[in-house]
Image (cartoon, rainbow, N blue to C red; front, top):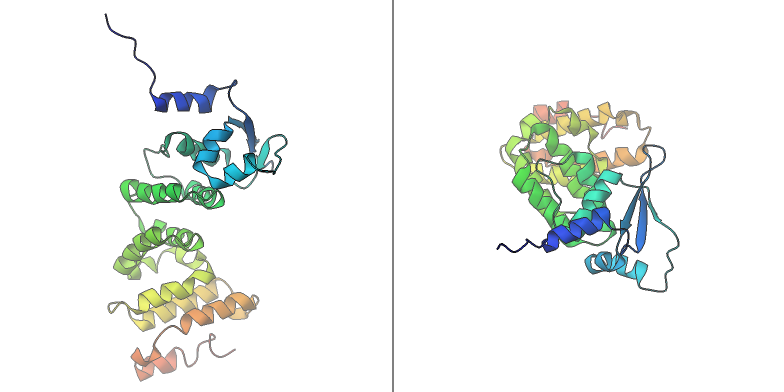
Length: 252
């Protein structure tokens, strides 16, 4: 006679997350009313507390939680994936996650101080993601926002390898201006990427974002700061006189 197979710990935890109405002792109402109908998640304080010091303080301190915890800064889909990681230590994605969901998972990992989740997301990128040129700049922005060194290194590898082609991708001009300085420092150290090319791209970035009109002086100064990382001694006299010497970046 065969013994009936008992559910695994993973199966039990997934069942707790999806179906439990008896042991659940906290609730999260997730979603922004402006974009989607909020979704209710019934969870377990002890499981959440063992995953995150933030949850431990939330549920096992003098802080009093009354009613569902409202979460409006991420989608319900991202929060469900976040909870799955807490319960069974996997983000459950066969394919590359959309950039929006990746960003929200990074945000949740930071918010709830879960370094292991951050590491898992980067591992997912290494295992699952077939990088395209269109992915690199948004990923670079994401890495800078979260100061995630492993993801930055992945981006640096792609940027230094394909810099000239990447400059022709429209998403370059949507980069956060605060992240340009770090990028210029990286690119200026690559002997195969010319100072002239980098400077031309910075000028074009400014024009496409209307920074040449100084409507946004703080962003304009960030762009100038990035350009000042370049070594203009590497330019020929002709390129210097037709470039930086007459550029709107230095002649406002």
